[in-house]
Length: 150
Image 1 (cartoon, helix red, strand yellow):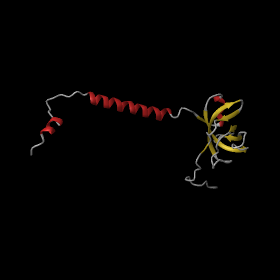
Image 2: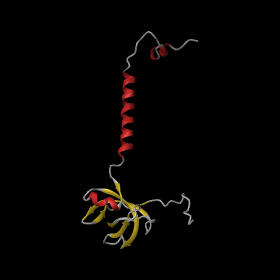
Image 3: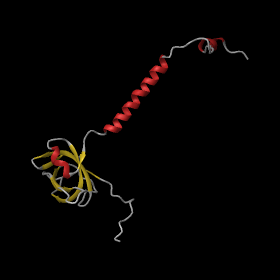
Image 4: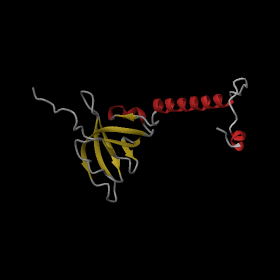
């Protein structure tokens, strides 16, 4: 079987006696190593904004944080001209701490008293001032077994 003469020009035969430069391999391995380090760094470092509970909020005055807690009380509406205010309590501990939150923006449909929420903002003068549109409700755990009263 004879090949076309042009095919010989574009597809040279492999010659084991000819040494090729390992530059391609070095570049490919370098790129793979950089990507691996980047993925590892982003998975360890996280989003960069700490998630804290109301009991540890006092140590983060003036810092941008994600506040996680359970809604205890709600006053007002976020859609009105003024901001909605609600109280978050700590989910852990024997004497759970509470924090007042001022929020304006869209409110998720699942937002109500007793629901766990995450909101981003800053503690100012004893009031947690949330960024508009940062309120997110945590998914209710419908996949965990019900608590028994035994």
